[in-house]
Image 1 (cartoon, helix red, strand yellow):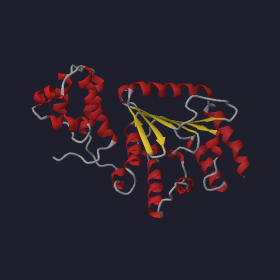
Image 2: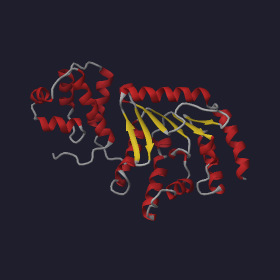
Image 3: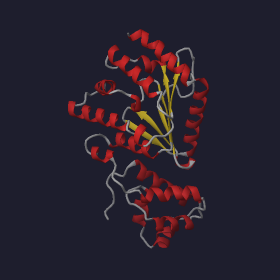
Image 4: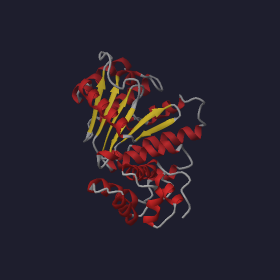
Length: 283
């Protein structure tokens, strides 16, 4: 089978874990290739996500590298066996791959926590609000491309009904007041956030302007918990697209930001009251 031209972030992540496993104990690609009965290019392709790995080879890889962490290995094995087609695959070639990778990350996560300072998180956006967010991009998107991104963003919200999981959104007051699409669109959006806050497993936590500062206030971040901590992922918004973070030291930093933010954000009931009060400004 020829190498993948554009591996997904999940496929790349499996490769990253294979490489980390090998490098942790100093096994060379040459020795691993000999043990697996393959060649150096194939080892490289496996480690960069351009080639898959069978369950049998993964077990041999782990034994060669002395990995005896059962839960971690089981999680990697599950990644090798998942070859299904998902709804987001229908968008490949129509929207940037990084946007598709966010939906894949959400689907496979055990829980999700997001911090936003400039706009309402995507899983909570109404169609009109999402359309207005994409309309602000520069250079402007062609109408067909903007519509495809809006439809994709709204379709991601099926996760709340088809694959529900704990979801916490920390939303700064600046994001709650930013008028993408104008006051009528924003009012509808705030009402939508209130409705979503009543979903099982969903927590909306607001951060008022009265909080003078908080960790991570200069960026938006999205923490996806994996089946084991080693497979956690953080997605950060950059101007050129989503960035996915896997390094353990960076993950620890973002976990601490999330924990500290939870100590200063309003609780869910207070947050609902806060949003209801904001609605009066957009009557």
